[in-house]
Length: 122
Length: 122
DNA sequence: TCCATGTTTTTATAGTTATTAAATTATCGA
DNA sequence: TCGATAATTTAATAACTATAAAAACATGGA
Image (tube, rainbow over all chains, first blue to last red; front, side, top):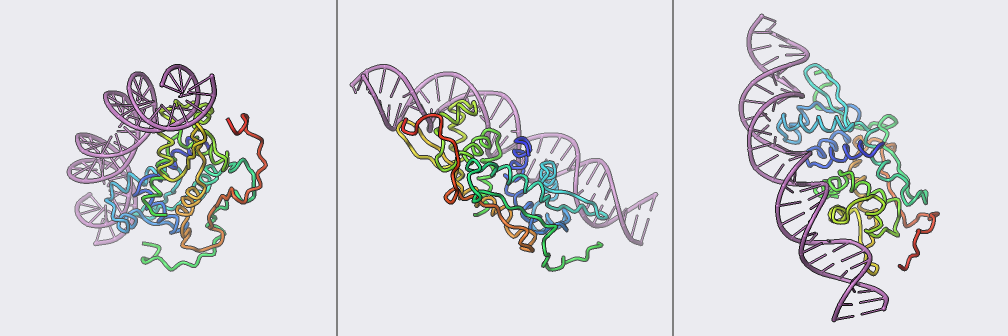
């Protein structure tokens, strides 16, 4: 990750609403959450949320896909991991195994999560 | 870590100069680097650097100690680790061991770093 | 085709942040 | 105590960012 991208990602996360959105999506996993439900859960006005989602997307921290009328947002774990690697890069001049970065990999995750409230195909 | 603190830390890092400073200090390890040398290495005007260091300090990402006329700044690894834990908290709804948090611990690091250019007691 | 739903875009404004130059504070050595 | 060094603080300004309200766009179903 280059410094410019890292600054963009950090700027994206450096805002209360966007940080809430991002953490919600990190916790939601690969399945994602429709914009409307994010707005509802976090009590953010739709245009405001849209503005923030655009920034998270531009920073490479979230992804979107369309499902009918809904736009479903999901965390981009690669982006998140890349950012953390960048922050801790060459920590303590590469001194020790104690300074290393484990990563989050939802692919190899054993999902033990409750079903979504609404059925998937809505 | 509470959301307000996390936003403060992310805001502190979301700026080119401050990100450079922070990474420099993360790589420098517990020993730290005097403000003047940071300014020199990163080619930042002293008042500008001072402004940025104050923000990093306020955000709990760096620590200072005085050594004679020099103020020596060092990364606060606890703050950094706390931030990364916050970002990845309950990743994928706690689904898997694959989603766990990076930590850096300079205390238990086997330091294999070259000596500083100038002697320590200057 | 028309309406309702879900979401984004536009526009305007209030608030925040980064930078520079000048002034100030703290420490050390003669 | 005086001058030099290391760093911070103050003050002013230019640039950026978040929010709200209104309008526009895209999709699906009657």
